[in-house]
Amino acid sequence: MSAALMLQGTGSDVGKSVLVAGLARAFTRRGLKVLPFKPQNMSNNAAVTEDGGEIGRAQALQAFACGVAPRTDMNPVLIKPQSDTGAQIVLQGKVIGSAAAREYQARKALYLEAVLESYARLSAEADLVLVEGAGSPAETNLRAGDIANMGFATAAGVPVLLIGDIDRGGVIASLAGTHQVISRDDRALIQGFLINKFRGDVRLFDEGLADITRHTGWRSFGVLPWLAAARRLPAEDAVILENAAATGDGKLRIAVPLLSRIANFDDFDALRAEPSVDLGFVPPGTPLPRDADLILLPGTKATIADMAFLKEQGWDIDILAHHRQGGRVMGICGGYQLLGRRIRDPHGIEGSLREIDGLGLLDVETELQEEKHLGLVTGASPEGHGFEGYEIHNGRTDGPDTAQPLLFIDGKGHGARSGDGRVSGCYIHGLFNKGAYRSSFLKELGARASQADHETHIHAALDEMAEAMEEHLDLDAMLQLAGRGAVAAR
Image (cartoon, rainbow, N blue to C red; front, side, top):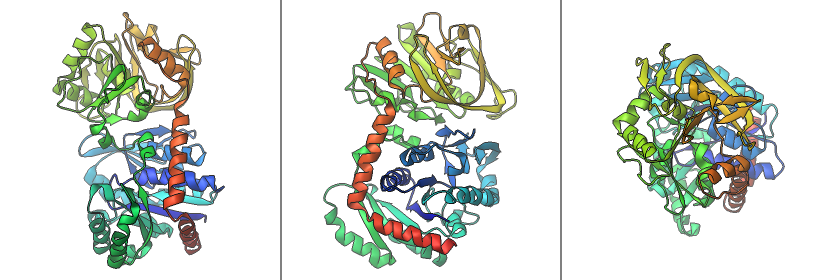
């Protein structure tokens, strides 16, 4: 077994995913072969892997930080919410069905064998496996049959570091409280803690560190300051989008409705990074801005439900008015389906509602298929500007407007444009990441853009985070702890 270390948090959104990515880059820069692992993830932000499956986007980012291609073993259980009470279950990259929340809780322990198989394969070829927990081990009502936190750590013999987020307040209580409520056996797996998102002089928290150690007996592995670079990395949780309003600095204004089941919203990170672009996510209850130059409809895990949601918000009226006044509209994946005349779900993939009218801005119709289409793609615009991306969808979209394709893949048309050229859609995620395509796209809208590929910005952010971690965290002690865990596993 390779060395391994698991990062768990006192709660959701304490920075686990970003910390694992930064640590992965830091240890990779030291010359180690590092691989990321997350036993169970709940997210509609998914990535397609070279081995033909899907995993959480966070694990794809962590693989990128390690300089390796993402693969399904890095996230063997992916839960993709389709409603408030049910979700699609992806096991080792493949959809195996759907389950209500209560049903999944009753059977999740059955997936532990697959989780351990995936972990063993990664461990056999890595110097270090960095494991990310989910939610918090303090959710003791979920401990029975757990595979995401202490259940996995116990089964695999992996030592744990606990992360506290000081920015949200109450960090001493959250760490000491976790120590108090978890079992003695689980408590013994936690070998220390680290503090994330500290603003100001970290030395001011020395007494706080001593208090945490006094209450828990755990040692501190450091205090990481608030890192602006973390904001430049793709976000995993759509919660962050609720505060991602437009900044007002760019000349080109793009509005993205925040759909209830929004998926793969990092599609737009490359556009947000452009100084000439002012892109904002519009939360429910807020009209779409009348002065938007472009309305971008994002992907969604439940297209029919989100079409109904879009109408409930009155956004259909805003979008149609925007188009009548000469504005442009574009849809990616589920957003593309929303632009058509009709969406049908004859197999009940998304639920009991079997069809719904779309916006009717593209002369196409979509039928949801039982088999999901997954794949990495490369192609070009009709003008020859190249792109790379991936497809991950159940829908098949056809109609007269597909005769005017937005893109070409392997010489075949993909997507659709309206007759007036102001409405378009496609299934390609990651479309804007390549500088050549993004630059031509924005030029057509009257804005300037850099020719740099977006991954150069992500590399720079990861390197900046790695340097900060070398300075503020005890990485040598982490490696020593991870190595002891490997010995224990043997």
